[in-house]
Image (tube, rainbow, N blue to C red; front, side, top):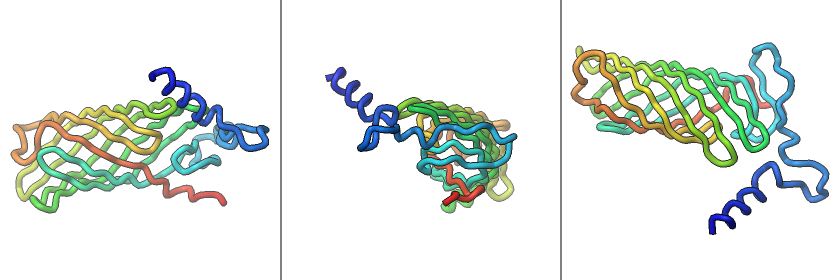
Length: 186
């Protein structure tokens, strides 16, 4: 059974899928071009499988003791190859819990590598949780799984002061990178 799964994965991976005439691979249209001196740019290819250096929005949903919704402005670099790729970037944003009225400005740096289907993420986040007059600074190392621009991470909160009563030590975050600049070239 494992052998059958491996054969199906190889046959249907982007490296081996050819067009009807058999002339070129799908991945020929998404090969990285020469680096453009650090400028923001996009190469061709599908939205979630494209090499680019861009600015984007990163919405997130974070769960633990409480649920938080978040939005961040992000600078990301993505490199897609034939069946593998990597990405890295940093975010500046805010998380909010409407039930307890807790605000948390955040700064995050992340890196991601993948092959064929899924990959591994690692990151470091900092939060400044505020609720009324109470506040606490938190550093959160994170790791998880993802695919190119979609991430699912586990994080462990390290509190600067004593624990913030409403925020637990453990969290799970689902986030997605949405490119906003430069716009799609059509």
